[in-house]
Image (tube, rainbow, N blue to C red; front, side, top):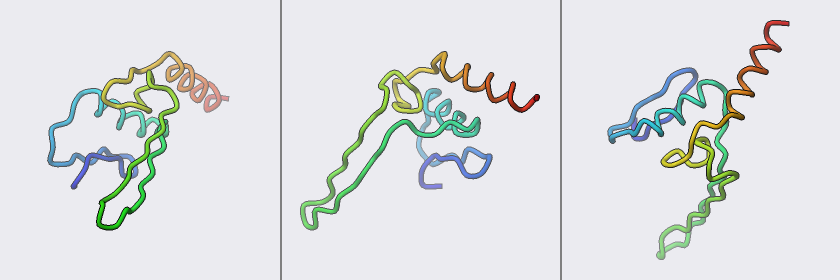
Length: 87
């Protein structure tokens, strides 16, 4: 793969080094968590591209894979999902 990403239920590794946090972020996708950032691009023609990124919570690993953390809210979400599945 050209980049590290999740495809179906697998983490597909790209050719570059991957940090434990980025791997944890990708594993979060396997568990059902979505990205907590929005990234947009705009083609500026000969001047290249403009990239805009908005992050919902800079503490959240799903928003900032390089520096975010696994939060208590992640565990609460998983526990609730397991509880619903067992009913």
